[in-house]
Amino acid sequence: MKRLLRYMKPYRSIVAVSLALLLVDSILQIIGPLLTKLAVDRYLVPSPHVHIFPLLDHWLSRDAWTGLTQLALLYLA
Image 1 (cartoon, rainbow, N blue to C red):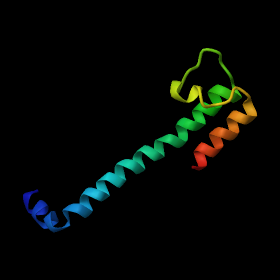
Image 2 (image 1 turned 90 degrees about the vertical axis):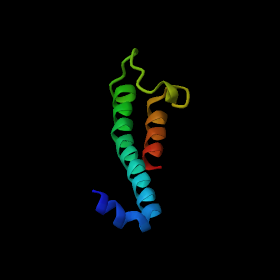
Image 3 (image 1 turned 90 degrees about the horizontal axis):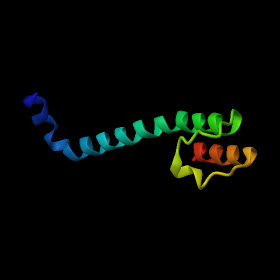
């Protein structure tokens, strides 16, 4: 392992940026299914006691069509 790290030493900044981008990519891959879950639980099969993302509750509309549009735009962004 030490030998491998010695070979990577000149490319330290590139490796650090690659690891940071890998972390960001992993987080962004999780957001899509979570937004889909929110759309289903909040608008398609509504339940009065479901609070999946309390931070998004204030920003999302109570109207189903408007809320689904907002989530679709979030998903595309």
